[in-house]
Length: 315
Image 1 (cartoon, rainbow, N blue to C red):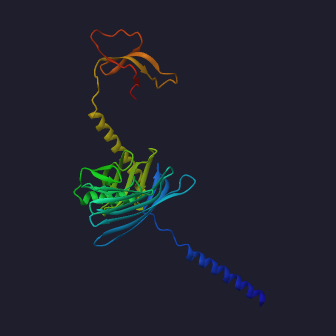
Image 2 (image 1 turned 90 degrees about the vertical axis):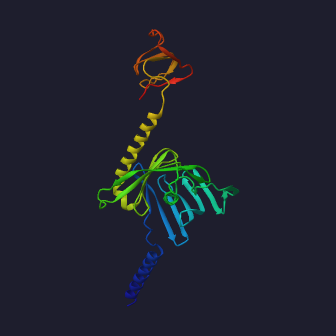
Image 3 (image 1 turned 120 degrees about the vertical axis):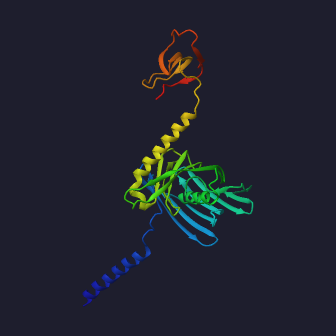
């Protein structure tokens, strides 16, 4: 009896410990966004928002786990029902090399900033929104809500600093999502270069493709759209190429047709040798015809002095 009693008691103790352990470690909330670098998972963001007739109050937890250690940032954001900012608090790391400690309070026509213990005040511009760089992603979702609610302005001032431009690119239909269509936007001014952002019919960010401070590509996807990650990446790449082509069309070359560049320093991308100095580059009808120091140029050809300039053949 004593032996049996001991075994039963041990079993009860083990069961009790297991049960308490289960209660103390509830399942982790489902991420609002999964964060990728070059389509490899590196982090997550968990958001919690509460809405009422006056507006919304949100808490966001952003976390990266790709460097052998974990970094995180927590933010609390409050807006009115038209997404007009009321307060913004963010503290933590949004990258391995930066730390944020920011508190913004909107009071009438003035904003109070407390950044890393230093307080200052600023008169508010007509159109403005509060965010600090590109995370948490929730702030960009709220920014797009502000843009829609305030007449899609051409430019929005960002507090504490910067300016954002947003424009609609088109719509995309997702395979395997019951024909759901997402509206695609370009956002410029939040981070380095442009971001491509998709919104669903609920005004939620479905996906975002952009770059970080190291110019690495970052993809952010709401979990239910994760199967379309490659489609988002391809579409963002096509938009980037279209933007580059449009910019090149606006650029005005200093010379076209037939001309010569003299006294140039030329870099040969096919050689590891030092750059060649004091060369003449002769261009005939838009194509390089000859490169050298003793080139006989046609009579009356236009010449441009490239002294102190580096030339690299077009790639």
